[in-house]
Length: 69
Image (cartoon, rainbow, N blue to C red; front, side, top):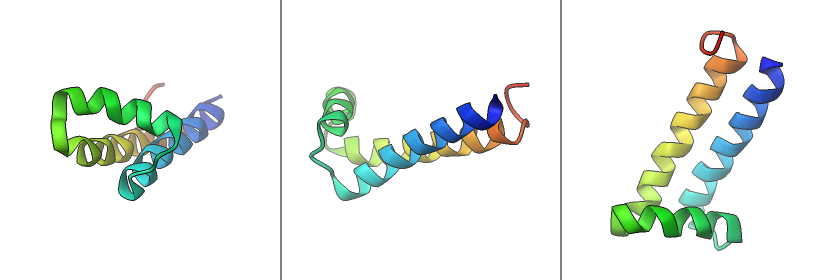
């Protein structure tokens, strides 16, 4: 089961990271950005890049049974 959830989390983390780099106009990313912009202002894209990396890193640990045993 960790393989399924780890893979799903990795895809979500990569999506957020890549969308933040490209400053995507896709509706899902725009919703994430709108929420982040309330707190982070002009740094919302940078914040979402960091969040994407963190989610991808945690998913790798979950995938390898290091975290979430």
